[in-house]
Amino acid sequence: MDNFAAKANAKTIPVVALTSKAYRDWHKRQPKATQAWLDSTDFKPEAGNVTLLPGRDGAVAKVVLGLGTPSSDPNRAALWAFAALPGKLPKGRYEFEGELDASEANDAALGWALATYTFNRYLSKPKSFPTLVWPKRADRKAVERAAAATSLARDLVNTPAADLGPAELAEQAAMVAGKYDAELSVIVGEDLISANYPAIYAVGKGSPREPRLIDLRWGDEDAPKLTLVGKGVVFDTGGLDLKNSSGMKLMKKDMGGAATVLALAQMVMDAKLPVRLRMLIPAVENSISGTAYRPLDVLQTRKGITIEVGNTDAEGRIILCDALAEADTEKPDLLIDFATLTGAARVALGTELPALFCNDDQVAAAILEAGNATVDPLWRLPLFHSYRRHLESKVADINNIANIAQGGAITAALFLNEFVSSKTPWVHIDTMAFNMAARPGRPAGGEVFGMRAMFEMLRRRYA
Image 1 (cartoon, rainbow, N blue to C red):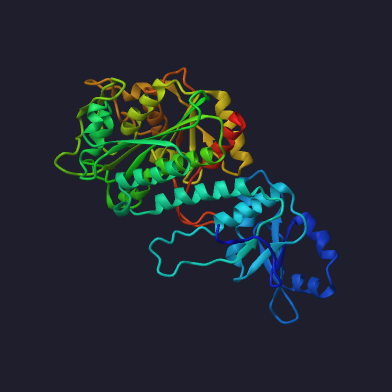
Image 2 (cartoon, rainbow, N blue to C red):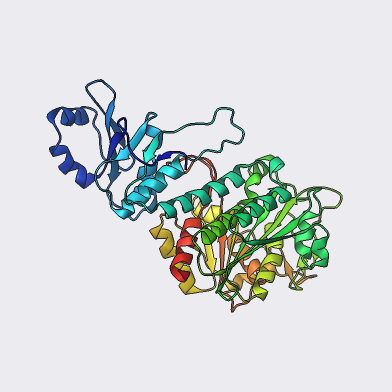
């Protein structure tokens, strides 16, 4: 949290944040010169608008931030209005003037933190930002928890696959585990076969970078079991069903599900939620080689269900099925997976809204409500079981792709559903994990959609 200061000093510049309604009253109370400046620059207090008020010496004397009109639209929320501020200010130290309420203070601090994130690993001259004095009523621990988890996941997704293979992803998990005294075990390479994770091995065996299953455990063994599963395909060529160049370009992000659950696990442990946490990440590279799995191969799985490979580019669901089957054996109170699973979900909902599938209506409603509360929305799609027929295979128990092009996000979720008991409350999130263009607080590149929403749901459920 380098872009924050503990307290103000003589050079600290005040910032006044105003809704459209509050701005009208505030404007009337200002000196005539200030009113004239605001009117001459045609400042409107719309969300994210900023104007700099000059002092007698010509330097910035005060900043005005528009918060607009309160709205239920998550893209017009105060969080993103506050996030627009750092990028519009000259270097310096700033402090909000007056008393922000607790919600506004949290939005201000988190918005600032998200907006001042940069991926600096390969930059010789990292970008710098102005500094904000911590808002007085902000829940500092909560803000730092969310910001740190977001930065962790963004960094992982942004790292090129050359520097983030299955082994490096396991190392990142080990660092998080060590910080919170969690247990971590990793099954590597051919040991996956003897440990009965044949589907994970089948997808990853085509790469010289050995596949592995990352398994983290934390918390009281008698507490409710919470299990997180994340798709960890560190790079996806499509396998022998090779992607074209445009389809392959962003495939360093195909471990976005793993990045999200690792960040979410960090939040759970940092908040000391009273759960028995387990996190499973099957980590593989889907590569082309003489040992790569092939179209129409029939694969074994941990659950005993055989899979006909209709397409080697639908590999994420194959590695997830072994992890989900293992997670389900412990009968968790809640099982959640995140995955960059289908382009079909992006066609249906775009790149900024994750698809939520859930076999429990109460859990789904709680997640959607938490998403609205945290300005981290999701949209529920149905587990429409009639479409299961499109996954039939003539030679195996199931095909990894449907025999129709439509409804791909649903049929992918139904594939995963085969490996989870109907008695286990299960959540599946199909996410983009990447911002295609920059917006306030959401720079272009790796992103964690749904993480803050999911943590808020878990906090309400278990705290």
